[in-house]
Length: 164
Image (cartoon, rainbow, N blue to C red; front, side, top):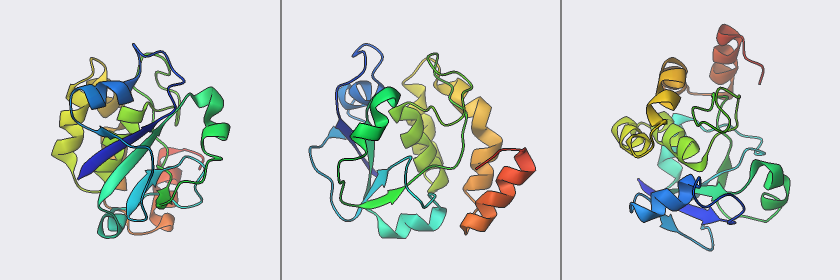
């Protein structure tokens, strides 16, 4: 699965996971999105499901500051917009905060849910804290990777005591 990042360059470049992904040729920088791109959008009404794999040819992570996310996502991105189901951040800045993922964590979670588990783990290996994200979310990611509907996601959230 091809990975792309649309960068707003709003964060500290030394901590920017999207920049590191581009540097290591894990992802490409893009300035536009296309209709068959999965656009990771935390404000989307629809949650990413494994069956979305059949609709897309690549994943686009929108790299922006969480403090400016409202502004960044007010831009009209073309593509199939999906939010990730709830996950805990493993990065040092937002450690264990629900849904405060870096671009790399979001991309890895997407890969995992879509069935590209080895690619997700390879991506996480590029970050000192990548194993932490995986350890915090391994069980729930396995559950999410088996879902067929939003109802399945909601059942998982109830089982784990998470609010959607």
